[in-house]
Structure formats: C-alpha cells, structure tokens
Length: 443
Image 1 (tube, rainbow, N blue to C red):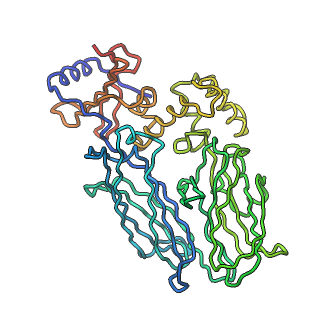
Image 2: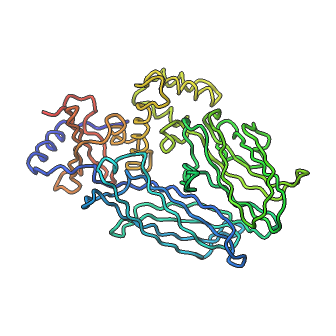
Image 3: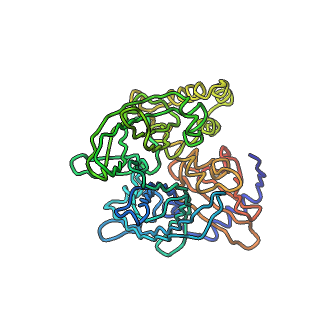
C-alpha cells in the first residue's frame, strides 16, 4: 500500500478532533450491504393448467439486520421485493411476469443473538409460472423503505406433462422426521464438519407403477466448482457416491427425503443427480443440483483457496505464502494452506479452527463494507479490520471547513486509534500514519 504521511496534518486533525468534541458513534449500529442468499426450485402445481409452482427461499444473517430494542428484547423489520422476468432464448430480458413482495419481522430476546453469525432468518414465497427460463431479482429493504441489497438468480422452470417426472432438488440444512419440518440449505454450501445432508424432491406419475430411483454424486474437476462444469462433462469425473432403490408409486405426487453422507467428501464442488428409470435402465427424467463443501464455519466467507491464500498477507511471511503457492495442483496448495492454519489452531484436536474462522469473517466483512474498485480487504480500512476487528467507536467527519474528510477509529482494548483521510473525496480513506507508528497509541 502507498501512503502519504503528513505529520502536520496529523497534528491538525488531532487538534480538530478535540476541539469539535464529537461524540463517538458506535460502529455496531451501522448496517452494511446485506448478504442475501436465494434458492428457487420448480415443482408441479396443484392443478395442471396453473403451470408450475416455484418456491423461492431466502436466507439473511442476523448480524446484517438492523435490530432495535423492543419490550420483548430486540426486533428487526425488513421487506423483500421481488421481480421475476422471463428470459428469451438469447438471454435477453423480457417484461416482468411476477412482482411478489413480503414483509418480515424478526424478534430475539437478547442482544447477543443479534450478533450471532450462525443465526439466519429464512423465508419462503411461492409463485406460479409457465415452464421456461426466468431471472429472479430480489431486493432487501429496511423498514424506512431504503433498498440495502439486490441479488439475482436464474431458474429453468420445468414442465411436468410427462407420464413420469421429477421436481427440482432441494438441499436441506435440517430435517425433523417426527414433525416433517425442514429447513432449506439456501446457499447450497456444506461445512466440512457435516457427516451428511438431506435431499428433498418430488416424483410425479400418472399411473401407479414401479420406478427405479438412482442417486449419484460427482466431484467437479480440480479448480472448478460443480456449477462451472457442464453436466455432461461431470459424468467423466469421479463418482463419489451412488445408490439406487426401486419403489412402487401409487400416488400422483410423492415426496422423497433421503440422506447422502458427506464425511468422506473433500473440499470442493460437487453435483448430485437423481434419475428416474425403468427396470431396463431407460431414463424417464433427471434432476441435478450443484453444491460445495467448504471449511467448517467458513462457508460464507471463503470462495476460492487461491484467493484465501493471497489474503494471508497481513499475518503470514512472504516465504510462507510462496511455500503454499508453490505446488501446481490446487489440492496440494489446499493441503499446505490447511497446514498453515493447523499450526495456529487455538483448539487442536477439534473440528473447528476459531482463529481461522475469525480471520476470514473479518476479510469477508471488509470486502462487503469497504470494497469498490478493489477488494475491501486490500484497502487501508479493510487491513485494520482484518488485523484488529471492528473498532470500538468511530468518529466520522465527512464535512469539515478546509479539512479533508476523515475518520478516527478507536480500539480501547489495545490502546490504539487510527486516522483515515479521504484525500480524493471519493471515499478512498487512507491511513494517515502506518499501523505500527507510535503515534497511533492512545494517550
């Protein structure tokens, strides 16, 4: 990083800060761009002329919602506004065909739950669509109507006119056999600590008959996710799981929930395929779903191992990073990366590495909050967040007479404060003095 260090400006800003006596504003109350996971699957509608039923699932982290005190504890309210657009054969967008809107209220009894990174709010919305390809765009809006995040996914809505057909596949995060309640895995990403996952799908038959249901899991090629690999190419890749069963199906619609083990799966991308066949192996219909297996506790923060290695630069020596990057094989680089973190595991012998989880959570937060033309973790504010976490308090001075916009971050537990100056006026805040400078110490 390149910095311009100006001692005179440092003194001026410190003086202005004391003179203005601005009350520090807690960062904890600020809301960033909100993560919004989307999953959409198509199933047969209740009536044939209604088209297909599409269930749209969302998942929003508690940590990204704006909770306010309430008589029962804390409450957060938000709205999801959707727009579903039909896509042409060339991918061009047509006119909106559906615009669903739904409101959510989330109540928790304690402040600690509002900051629990393992808690999410899940929603489900159902719409009816004709078979075809669609873009599903969802915007998350705060209680005051401001749009804080927009995310889009595409879905190929199936038709179910064939004598035998299968719905889309839905990965489940949780499934209770006794109550038949299920929680969808909206992100389609599994933690390395999971011993298996449940898979839900529906089978439709016009006449009672026996159907062979075959299930396979394929490993994506090294360095690619399953979603990046054409389905026909997956067949030549390693098959890591296979099973089959023959069932006599009497009902027009039957729901199936099966468990697929993952304890032997290594990190990476996969494709699960369910086929409906006759006794001779002829295929009636097929459904597929891509998913990934990620580091335990890091599924929402690490997307690519090479990027994760590059993000070590704030805590690893250059020779350590060179050593990790040396192998040509991604799997070998992954092994060295894991060894780097194994040596720093505060609780060896357990499946979790809390230090690794915290580090990449900070990287992910820096990317969401401070990313623009470059990744957020590469900015000065991002570097400080990655190294020290969120500040205890922030003094923000965006408008000052004859003084460039600046912020002062306070870390009382370590006795430090860091001053960032926006010299360009474009929000590119840079450290006034390096993080190791003695002038960052609180006096």
